[in-house]
Length: 162
Image (cartoon, rainbow, N blue to C red):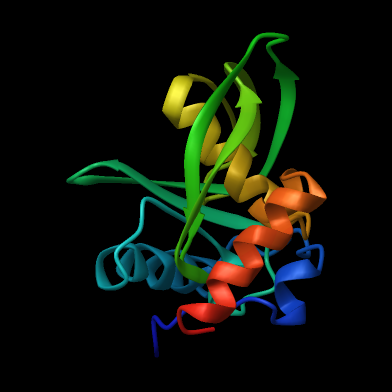
């Protein structure tokens, strides 16, 4: 089982991930794989598509020892206020861009056992979850840039090892 990320422009990164419906051992294995990849790659957050897994599951590690798994996450509220954060992707290593995101969100999701949960997130944590949910929806972070900025970023990406 590899932790190597799918690299841009792999079409799996532009596909909408399928909702998880079976909350059994297979889903727990996917969560474990995502959690291990957070360490191996390393990364702060990973969505299933980053590892070629067509499932609406995200693993996030904002603190050194705590990984949180969100299954079928959905933003149910977003603040009108926005903030800009520098973002990158394991699927496009070495390239970052400033992306505007809501300053706060409310997230509805399922835990690994299928129970419903909600979380209120703000600042960097909100940006991380917005980034990963975008990936579940087939929206790569550079899709949030203007065409000019995206073209410049892609030029740098191609020049430095794509």
